[in-house]
Length: 190
Image 1 (cartoon, rainbow, N blue to C red):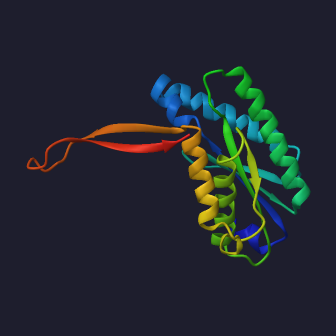
Image 2: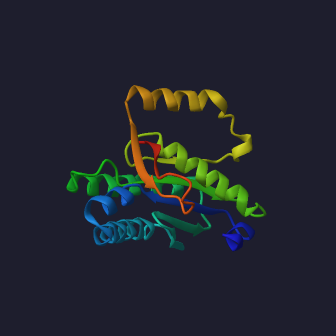
Image 3: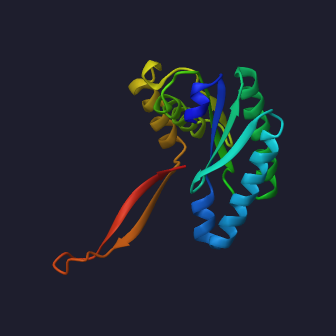
């Protein structure tokens, strides 16, 4: 990414495979690995339509596509292609709520890596609050984008209205014997 920000205009796509945790819990890590392999194959297939595109596994359920000498049109093309492939896969796997979401941004020469990653993360977050298997293209920097409280109020109101909150728990046992075991409860927004 550092090299890409020093050369020509490049495209960065961050893809998050959203069902990995659920698959690992329900069916085990072998099924989770198979899911990730399928996602990787779909991402590779979509990226082959773009010249000079490279696919990377970032960590866990996150992948990246980096294409040098790119533009807005290629970002739109990639977003549509990935959505189509993910929707097709979702239709085969009835138990999934979604397959993956995509955040897209452009890397301009001379930009800091943090700026590019910030835009990519914002695009991914916006994609995850839109339609199933959605994608979002973020052109402006995070600090330039007037998102504020109004955006998050709409997102939270929508999550509550759809009752898209899962409460999960996990037992916590302290190493200190004077502290009793307890359950930690956390919310997951679907």
